[in-house]
Amino acid sequence: RMWAERPTAARRPSDGGAAQPQASRHPSVLDRVLEHKLVYIETPDIVETTLALENYKRACDCGRGAVFLSVARGKVAEGVDFDRHYGRAVLLLGVPFQYTRSRPLISRLEYLAETCQISEADFITFDAMRQAAQCAGRVIRGKTDYGLIIFADSRYNRIDKRNKLPQWIRTHLTDEHLNLSTDMGVCISRRFLKRMAQPVSDEDLQAVSLTAQELRNPVRVREAIARTVVS
Image (cartoon, rainbow, N blue to C red; front, side):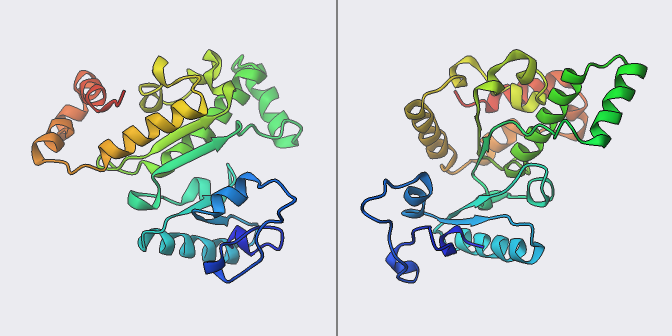
């Protein structure tokens, strides 16, 4: 479903002539996004979500682009790939912690504490970072794919959380990419997308391509990752 179909949301005149935001109300973030992109959301209804995904991809195919809002630990965040032009940026709002009062989680925490001496805080943080990485990985589906990953929560900057992210993410979390203001984030994003939109020569592609034998060499893998870091 497209968010603009809701009665309280705004749509452009070209999207069916629905009413625009009232002049007396300050435009929300969604109002401003809808001025430029279509917005679709994941719902508990699998049919609605499937239709929203189809329309989202159709908007991407025609060049207009769109925004898809989903929930961490949901079907879309864990099972749908947004490769190529279907996903050039993922924005994570908040940290996807589990509901700590659920009975299965309480039982698991008790078991881990008794048998493995793993503290409750360590497991909950590790699980949340694993889910965050799962969401982030939806837009990077191959060695020629690219996209922006934005952790929009200051808690990701804490050492205890950042160190639990996968290495392929931590490699790019350098000092110049931490604690960014909105303006700096926009500037870096524009520079990155402009650079990545340029044609790639066979020579440049070969420089970051590894053979099966090289993939088993950690040194070669780290060197290839270092060459692809965009400052």
